[in-house]
Length: 454
Ligand SMILES: Cc1cc2nc3c(=O)[nH]c(=O)nc-3n(C[C@H](O)[C@H](O)[C@H](O)COP(=O)(O)OP(=O)(O)OC[C@H]3O[C@@H](n4cnc5c(N)ncnc54)[C@H](O)[C@@H]3O)c2cc1C
Ligand SMILES: NC(=O)c1ccc[n+]([C@@H]2O[C@H](COP(=O)([O-])OP(=O)(O)OC[C@H]3O[C@@H](n4cnc5c(N)ncnc54)[C@H](O)[C@@H]3O)[C@@H](O)[C@H]2O)c1
Image (cartoon, rainbow, N blue to C red; front, top):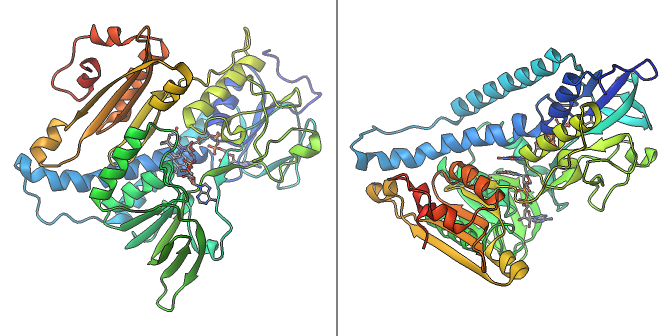
């Protein structure tokens, strides 16, 4: 379908939300010849670019210098009194976010996508009303509104911050309490800890990063504790109070109260679907407010689709982008509809050190396949040996028992996400342990452990 709308509607496609999924879908639909408009209530680029993956990764890089500066002496370098200035890093990161925001805006403009810098809501099956009161009609509507941090409703919760605010802090807090045991909690724990904060993670269960293999989770916990991060498990938030000295006193179940300077909630993200008019036009929502879609991202209404975090399938940028691309190709391009394959999606946690994984964990494989074989390498990277850093990496390969087909790879150690991206291709392609064994190692690397597993 390449015809611009005939006049029955203002646009062929109206996208609500200019984040990872919405921008890709809108740009591709426009490239296919559709007349497209997009509304964004905050900043074009969405979570990933403005206050997620990208600025977070820059902080991770900035944080890691703390260890490199510690280790460099063993490599012959003398650095007199290294000083860290948070505001320099913060402002440089935010300046790069501005650059990317501009680049994303230009990409849309270059594809003649009309941008409305305001909130949009559905007011009819084909009708969108903007915050300014302007009414727009569209043949197809794409909901790509993402998710927002979930904050537990305890007393004083408004005194805490979320990842949204973490990028804008005036200063690095001396003592930080992070609630949650998932991606954001572990990534920001690493960041703050490397910048010198005293970090405590409190989690309502005793499991961190529950979707990852237990061996990696245990290793991250052990290394994090050695680095000085404290953990309190089975701790549910009761409340936050401000003390006379201006600190935050946090109370929780099963543990003593704690005084800190900052509380960061990293307790999951909820779909941004309230007040969007979805129920009024008959779009079905799930229990968490997520938009229910089929495998082609179609909602319960034929001409309304939804992609990305607001569907609560897999909350990752590359997934939102794929879903946006598949939608645009299906509705406005040529050829058969393509459903995004949500199996075997590689992922990473940018903790210190990072974790990366693809496929089934050992326990999932055992449960689903019965007979499995597990190969493991537990080693100290060469750089850590010379630096005198007692931090070991762990690589694990999980294979189907009878044919050695690899069903999962799990890694914790320096550069694990970089190595995993290539290894994930092999797992997705259904290769076996024998294929890895047949591949000659690149020596000396950490990645060579993957082809030398016993
Ligand atoms: C701190 C943090 C770190 C992350 N790190 C990673 C990572 O390393 N790797 C990774 O793959 N993923 C990461 N993620 C997840 C990733 O950011 C999301 O999965 C991804 O951005 C989802 O894209 P999306 O298009 O669904 O939504 P978003 O990118 O959130 O875009 C939705 C947009 O819609 C706008 N919007 C909402 N409602 C309306 C409305 N009514 N009208 C107009 N506009 C509206 C919002 O302002 C937002 O800009 C991270 C997330 C966070 C919070
Ligand atoms: N590296 C990455 O790819 C990356 C980084 C950050 C975020 N993300 C995405 O963003 C999503 C959100 O990140 P997140 O860390 O907030 O979520 P998460 O789902 O990873 O972890 C949420 C944590 O909060 C806890 N929790 C939930 N509700 C709670 C409550 N009421 N009280 C106390 N604890 C509670 C959970 O037990 C869990 O430990 C992730 O699921 C991920 O998809 C990805």
